[in-house]
Length: 200
Image 1 (cartoon, rainbow, N blue to C red):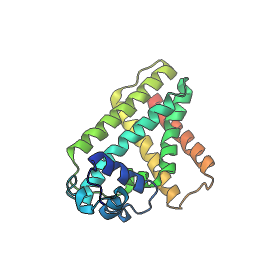
Image 2: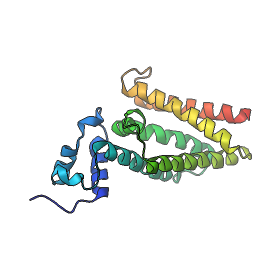
Image 3: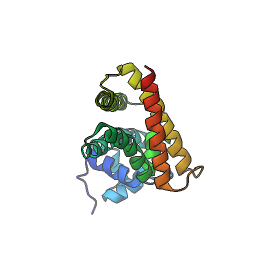
Image 4: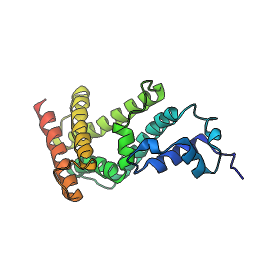
């Protein structure tokens, strides 16, 4: 008997779980999601007009998942130097342990018409990440960096991380050992951020 009492949240969470370590996100389709939920795939159309709409909503939800993980990791450390290291290490942990989610976040083409809710959620996350760096930097140096500077430096530093992880998961890595790779990228991210903020 088909389950009829599915919810929007259940669909999004099921999609995220199925995508978590997929190499090809398009291999996860509405039929597979419906089969996992125990309902007809037509039921999903009551909530999403297309698979693209669902992908945008899972992309939005994924940002909250990451921020919860980051907050949890940062709450376990107290000194500013450890907070900075943990901040960047969390990106590596999250991306390498959930390669399908990394692809969804940064590599997968979803569609041209980006929903406003996704734009708003992304901006909120960017502001929260920048604020973490502002607070950490103030504790480290006693100086409060300009918000615009932090925004630019964080963007550039994160693009470096995304590039390194993309090379790693595609088999074009320069460092094979995952622990060595993570340590190297975290050190480089800290150096990039520190050098750029010190120049201001």
